Image (cartoon, rainbow, N blue to C red; front, side, top):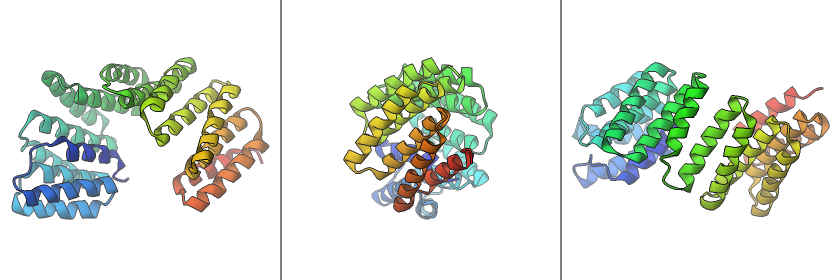
Amino acid sequence: MHLAYSSALAVLLMSSGLAYAQNTDIESKIKYCNQSIVDGNASKALAYAEQVLKQDKNNHGALLCKGQAYGGTGQINEALAALQAAEKNTATVVDHIVTLILIGNVQKSAKQYPEALNTYRQSLAMSQAEKDKHFERISLNLIGETLVDTNQLEAGLESYLQGGKLAANDNERADNYARIADTFSALGKYDQAIEYQIKAVLMEQQGGDLNHFANASLELGRFYTAAKDYLNAEKHINRIIKLSKDQGEAFWEAKSYYYLALAKAANNQPEAAKKLLTDAQHICEDIDAVSLNNEISHALNKLPK
């Protein structure tokens, strides 16, 4: 387990101007603590949090950061203790909503799904009472994730659809369209999955960066592959191969070969798939893309010998 699940909330805390610092020294340390969460450095984050808590044992921001650091490294009891202490020291409704969301994240990462759902529903109710559409959308999406994780796909889909109605910009719309598409795909409803993923691609094309656009396009290729529409699958994947080569983006070139190989394998072309996977593996080795390389190795092992 790592810190990725909480880094987005850490960024939010850094940029939201939540009032939990009493002086500039404490404020700076909390800022560095949250940045350490974003950087994936739990020990550094904990060190900054403890420095603040020695000055102010009930400091909300330091307790939040401490909880995220413990949660991101799998120390669930310590994380919940810090976050529950933070909940008792919330100065504003927004502080309380953020704290509940972070508690829910820890519970979800520990597979405490009923508890996570209950916590997210508290944050949702509070957001709705405040008419805060931003946190209402976040809460709905987290409820959707938890329901999908527990194989309650229809209920998760409904939560994502509700969250999508609250999206404030193209990036948020793209995020919800992608969630909806992935859930339709899990339900075996590939036409609907493709419909929503096309919308996600269009939103990323308008408001996203290369990483988000490439990922959305490859996922569209994956859904076309699942629907056995190999012509369209290859068209969208090849588009990202060309783009990644033009932009010198080796990671996306490798990932595109991987997705194209999956399409070839599904279309009974194992030799073509093997070559693509081998080429992708070489790129991964050059750029030290360990996680992607592991996925590729798994796909190679599944090909007929």
